[in-house]
Length: 116
Image 1 (tube, rainbow, N blue to C red):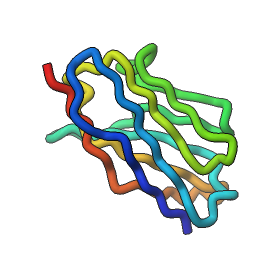
Image 2: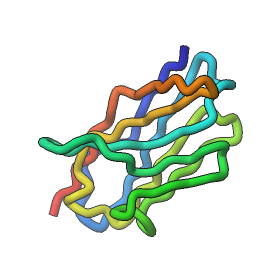
Image 3: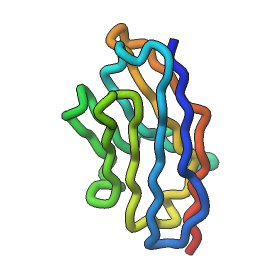
Image 4: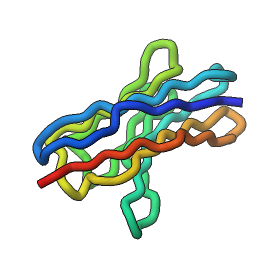
């Protein structure tokens, strides 16, 4: 089992920055992929960014050049640095980690609100 705890959401003005963190505990040695998803009201949950094996990153087109995903050396925490935030980035952001047996774990979600 893997438990995830997210932090770092909040209210920010357009153009501002936030950094999200997601800390894993439990059987973390089996985690090989980490990612951030978001879900805005009335919309489907979508991939924002992912990092696999600590090296390979993938970003949604809407956040390329503004968001950066990274993880710590202990491979237990994933971060999402969000710069130049826009009102359309407003959503609940979820952390997801996947193990080598392709079992997925989700965080509880953290609200990000960008005001214009």
